[in-house]
Length: 119
Image (cartoon, rainbow, N blue to C red; front, side, top):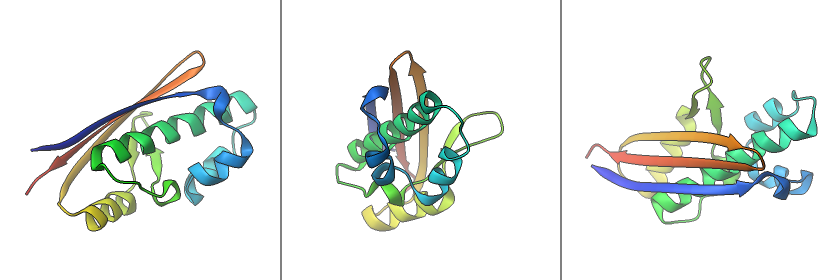
């Protein structure tokens, strides 16, 4: 059963070094630091921020951004790491699957999250 669907859009220019420290998990910061250009760094952080805001909408409760890690498969598909999924279901109850998607268009990043409960 679908527990929640969340969508969020972020203007990439809103991202700065100060909020990057609040938005990204430690693993995400390590990846962020490998990018050379500021444009790519901001796009990366904006996408992660949009995912985390989408998850807040799914669960209808605040989630500390740094507790959630969004990674990418070799194909580029984003996913939540296992620890993040476990954290969310332990904190808010239930058991299931979380699907996410991120897209970028010019100055915007948009993300969708779908939480499916298997109980």
